Image (tube, rainbow, N blue to C red; front, side, top):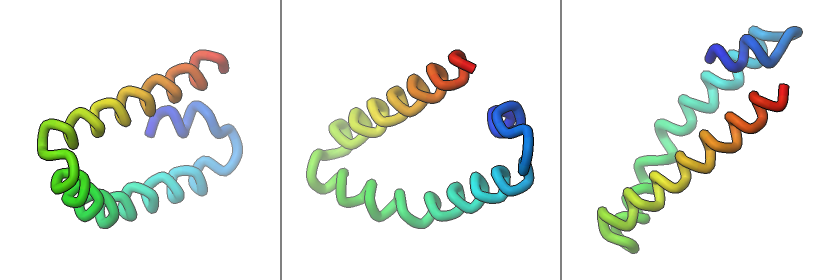
Length: 68
């Protein structure tokens, strides 16, 4: 949340609202998606894929924030 405040100088409230709405949608989308991934790849493969996904998400966010 702090990254939003630092990134957006104008319309901080709109950016915060969109971020919170996205988090709410993620609560409903990810559990069924993760259940399918567990069925296909087993729990170890699903956790590996989730870890890789989070790693690249954090990496891309940190690159964007460091360039600023």
